[in-house]
Amino acid sequence: MKTWQLFINNEWVDAENGEVFETYNPATGEKVSRLAKATQNDVDRAAAAAKAASEEWAALYPEKRGEYMLKAAQLIGERAEEFARIESAETGKTLNECLKIDIPFAARAFEYYGKLMTGFAGQLIEVPQNNILDYVTYEPYGVAAVISPWNFPIHLMTRGMCPALAAGNCVVVKASSKTPTTTSMLGEIALAAGFPTGVINIISGPGGSTGNAMMANKDIEVLSFTGSLEVGRELTRRNADSPIIKKLILELGGKGAIIVDRDCDIEGALNSALFGVCFNQGEVCCASSRLYVHEAIYDEFMDKLVRKFNSLIIGMPNDPTTHIGSLIDKEAQTNVDGFVKRARAEGAKVLCGGKPFDQGEFAKGAFYMPTILANVTEDMECMQEEIFGPVVCATKIQDIDEGIEKANSSAYGLGAAIWSENPRTLYWAGKRLKAGTVWQNYNVTSTLEAPYGGIKNSGIGRDDGPHGMYEFMRVKNNMQFVGKEYDNFWELPKMD
Image (spheres, rainbow, N blue to C red):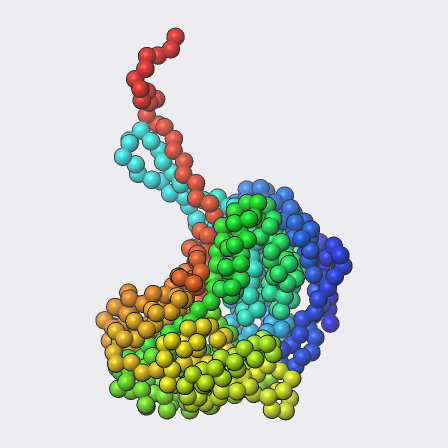
């Protein structure tokens, strides 16, 4: 088991007090890594290193910053299997998913943003006064912080740190204490790619100490966080007391809805509903955990969906035949099971699954059977709160209008899906659904090229695409007088 130090100012260093913590494989209970547990002073050291390097990094031509980032992308690709094994071991997700999604997306983030900034430009603003040259410039904040969650550790980390770097910021980053190792490995990538001293700084530790230390630091001016609504609220409260009020970019929880109209392609919609809540064991913020099916096809659809759910293979993450791996830990397993038990007590019917999968070798892990709850109502806890497991709550609707009304009733607004073969239905549903992303005959997918984020309790700001890079830049307006004579508003006489 390897011990990872903090990566500060291009050096590997121990935590100030020498403390460490360990991570575990949720499928087996085995230890994965040992990491330094950062203190407030460690966080302040990392931020100071980033600040010291920020002016020189920002002054580099975008093409030069891009060269470092493209090299990092190449290096991650060369070590993809190593990254994937660690990611799978700490998260419990399948090795197959890590190889196909998590690691390629991390490499692609360095590549995409390494190229995007090279074509970035300011704006000339036309103003009514013809004697004013007004132009807008976009400038880095200086020091940016990124905190990534445990469900997609390196993918969601690079989704934040790469646009920050491309925009000219230096970074202090921290992954969840449950899954920090692949983020620590980025320190090796930074050294091998030749990033200048202080540009990338990596700390590790629990959010209650290291995350709060980042909020208290005066040099960090923008912070991107992906995680739970509760932590997002706490960061917002702490921001009010921060020495410098930070810009917060928050991607929080979700309670996604998928609406299936009577004219849909049933097989396509079935696979979409299945993927929408079982991908990554349902540990996805935008998971489609509310299913609204038109009454005309409800019985047929649900019968086939149950058979689809029952066909999924629960197995060890490193088994290539596995569809469903382990939840992140036993606490998550208990939490998911609690939702199901309370739903059943409220009158919901369990069509399949509905309990932990703990046979034989799986008893050591945190596996949960893919579950369908029917006979649910909008006021039930399972329809209002984020379950974060492979559990979908299904109900029938009379028409699309009812489905949209119920989909919009949630306090969350991260993603929503609509299935129909009528393009008008798709268009108008897209207009009316209140979510940051609306998937039309598609589901639970984001790309680095297009904006992703939520509304309402699902967060503020956007990740991905040019929009994601704008979040890490200040907008500055410049007004230059270019008239023949300077203004004399009061028409006072010239002074001798």
